[in-house]
Length: 279
Image 1 (cartoon, rainbow, N blue to C red):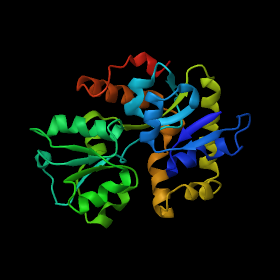
Image 2: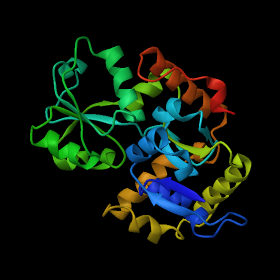
Image 3: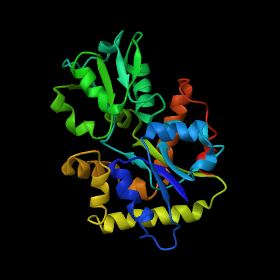
Image 4: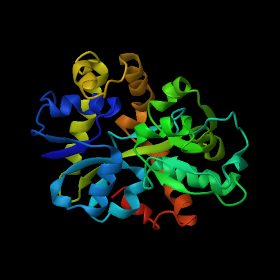
C-alpha cells in the first residue's frame, strides 16, 4: 500500500509503527516523504491511483472529496499551535499589512486560509503582493527586508526569535477565540475504494504504539527531522499529536466544518457538501 506524509516529527512519530511492521495485520507500506504543499497538489492534480493514503491540509479537502475520503484519525488539529504572522518591526496593528509584500508557504494550506479569514475580519484596505516561497526561506526573507511579513508554521513557533523577528498575530489564538474550535491543520485521506475501517483501525493502533513506546520512533523521527534540534522535535510532537490524532470526534468534525464553511463564504475554497466529510 502506498502512503505519503511529511518528514515532520509529528507525522513520522504517528506513522512509525504502521510503516515498520509494528501494527498487527497491516500491510507493508511504500512511503513517500513530501511537504504538505506537495501532497496537496498530488491529491488535487495527481492520479488518485498513485497514492492510497495521504496527509494533506484540511484546506485542500474541498477539491479532493470525490476521490478520497477523510479518515477520523492520524491527522492534526490542535490548540496553541497556530500559524504566526511575523515582521521585522515590532508591530501589533493588523493595518500594517496594507500594501505590504507578504510571504506564505502555500496558497492551499490551512495556514493561508486562516490568514485570509483573519485579514478579511481585521485588516481594512487592500494588502499588497502575496509571494509563495519555500517555508524555510520565509524567516530569512523577512529578516533581510526582502519581504515585509511572513506567514510561518510548525517549528517556526519555537525558532522565530532566533531571527530577531516579532509576532504580529498568532492566527491559532485568533481562531480559537473567534470560534471556540481547535485549528484543523492536517487531514489523513484514503482512496474511496479502499477499506476505511481497516485503515482507521491500523492508524489508531499506530498512534497508540507511538504513545506507549515513545523511544521506539526517536531514531526514525530524528532521521527525517531535517537537522531539527531533538528538543524542538519533541516539542513539535507534543504540540501536534493529541486526542484529535486518535479520533476527530464531534469537536474535531465541528472545527473542520466551521473552517470550510467560513472559507467557502469568503470565496477561498469551493463549497463543500459536509456529509462527504463523514462518508
